[in-house]
Image 1 (cartoon, one colour):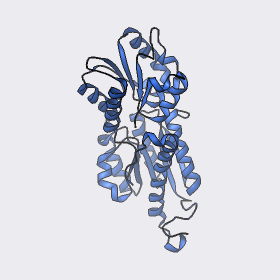
Image 2: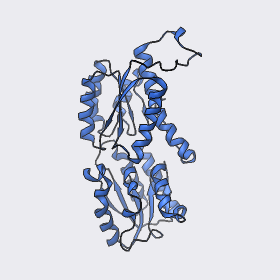
Image 3: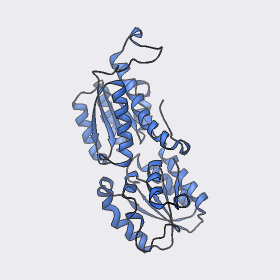
Image 4: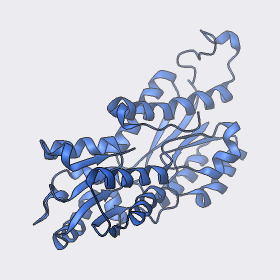
Length: 306
């Protein structure tokens, strides 16, 4: 299993399944290779025994900060796999900061774990030499949320996989659906708040921008800065200032799950009418939060596409 996509129809069941799948696939692969249990040690044919990863050490990157909406789903999936299979897991919280992820990866390698499960946000160029070094030391690595295509191509037969969407396609699909369902037309104004500058992770934002450009919309883009990436409250002023100054705004695209954790405040700037400007988000857990804010208008206002 190298990729997993969670379609909208699966909703809450799918989002948890993807998080669990990330860890189950990695843990089973790493522990099978490291522990090499004999065929007689297994129960049913092809099924590993319970707690068969006891004694294994894994470092796991949930992504952002403890309690964040998206990363909590990922963390809970990891904890479920940890309980099921018995490895010792260390969790690294990175504030969604690619530079911090790189530093923490180096620190993780120094602890000599059996495996590391990373978010791919820093991108191929930053991660390639580090993953090569980890593999040379016998440490298995896998990625989630953001693809590391170079490492996956090189080490796919050696335990490296990916759980998550193909990000550019996911962003483009969101924007295409927004144009269709929202009745957007050439010349309409849209605002995109995303992470275009990040290698790999920025592909979903770029997919949104490419599709909107193809549809002929007037697009205003704002990069989510490091402070807002870490704590969404830091972005309120920037968003409300923009929305208040653009009364002709027809669509808003938010490409970061944690920005929806603020719920009502960032989406109620002076003069902002949610019935006029629809908000589109790329993942279910974000959509679910916004729905709770705007009942009963949620089904008319917000779009979801994964």
